[in-house]
Image (cartoon, rainbow, N blue to C red; front, side):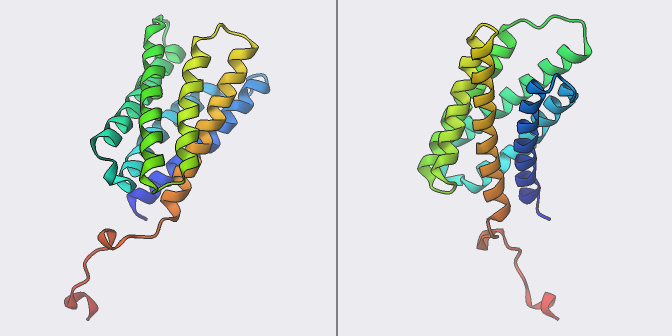
Length: 187
């Protein structure tokens, strides 16, 4: 199995776990949320390079967007570790910086996805919408509106990641991806 296929599966699993994460909100906390959040971040970071690999013509702008998404996930991963396994306080600017990186990365990668025509344009729009909703929900005071916006963000980004993952897995090997077969290997 190719690395790119594993990365596609990582994005698909990330999407599924993200939707399970929503169920956690409504089931009274029976699922160990901290484990799911760390798994989500790691799967996302692992799967990101495959998006760029299938959209190489997006250039530096696409790479900057992917880096922003990776930085956002890395910050979120560290914040969650500190929050769950330490008594240290986390300054609110640190999660905000993650949300801002995620917004910038979502808008950039979503836009280049729409323009590149490698993935379905709807995936790009879902990623953009999820990034915007993620930041807006984090800026709202805790309450029903925050929960609704947060759920909408997770649904949108999970749908986008599932779309990326599914297309990455289903995309046939391109000519440049295939290993060169020599006459010696046929014998």
